[in-house]
Length: 64
Image 1 (cartoon, rainbow, N blue to C red):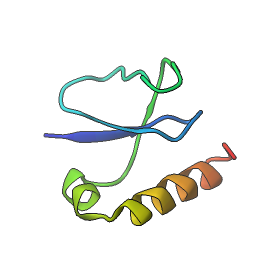
Image 2: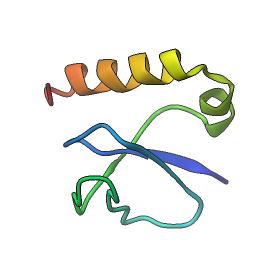
Image 3: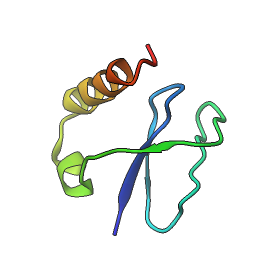
């Protein structure tokens, strides 16, 4: 099953299948956070929807 993780530092979203410790390849943060968004929903989103989701997540979690 594919899982999505977001970097709390830069907002980069990464797809993984089996890893529990997920690092950000964009900014180097060692611990990304899992998101409550299914892979199926994520791949059906437009780029604008993905950007809005990222910005909302960062706002809600106090990162920006």
